[in-house]
Amino acid sequence: MNAISKSSPEYRPLPDEIPTLTDAIEDVPPSWVSALDAQAAEKQAFMALSAELLQQLRPEFERLAAVLVHRTLESAWQHKVNASSKSQSPS
Image: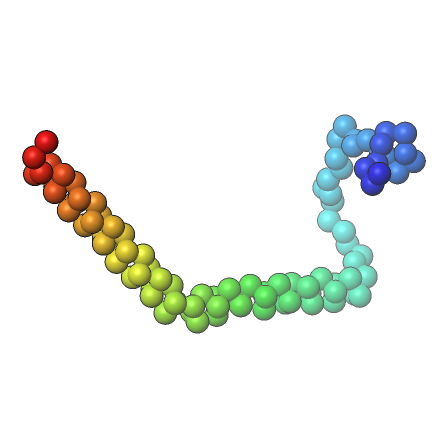
């Protein structure tokens, strides 16, 4: 069984209060600063993909929206025609 039970040595209850950082860290090692800067740059590049992908997919989105509108109107028309033909037919 993969679940951790309370009797397992790995079980640690959550603390009543989760500590928060209230004071600025003054002496951050340069390697940490570089790593954090690299991670921030990587995130920015990754998020820039979103705008690029949306721009490239725009024609497909527009085509799909047009197909959806056309099918919806066709269905509504068929429903209207069927409803009016039922109301005009003799009982």
